Structures are given as C-alpha cells and as structure tokens.
Length: 90
Image (cartoon, rainbow, N blue to C red):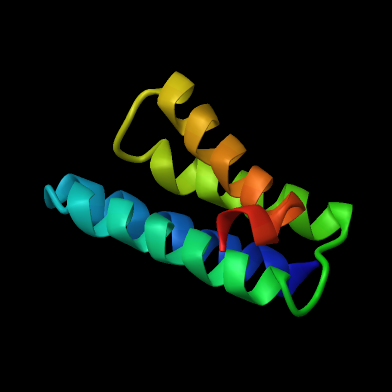
C-alpha cells in the first residue's frame, strides 16, 4: 500500500542519512530497543507471518545502511526470532 511504502521510504532514508553522518551506534541502539519492545509486546499479542516478514525486511534495510549484507541478515534473523518466540527473549 502507499502508506506502507511511505513508512519504508521515511525509515530507510533516515537510516541512510544517519549512517552517512557516522551515527551507526544510534541505529544499532534503535534496533536493540526495537527487539526489546517486540519481546515485551509479543507476550501480549502474537505477530502473524506478514508482520514478521515486514519488520524483518525493514530491520534488514536499516542495518544494511551501515554494515555488510551478511551482518544485516543476521540482525534481521535475530529480530524474527524475537517475534516468533518473544517469551524466550523477554
């Protein structure tokens, strides 16, 4: 949808700008905070496959702004594991 594309554009563009300014740590901390939120929130409501894929893809796009594709895949995988089994990470 258009709103989804708008969100993706804003998030990824912002991540790219922060990475260019050398603010990698801010992006890393943001992803860690997101993992904590997803672990807490996931104990209350379950995420469906579409939601997990979308969030995983978005995290991959953010982390790809400041690190290798291999590391970005790893980070995205960590987020997906948190979303699948939030109680294990809470």
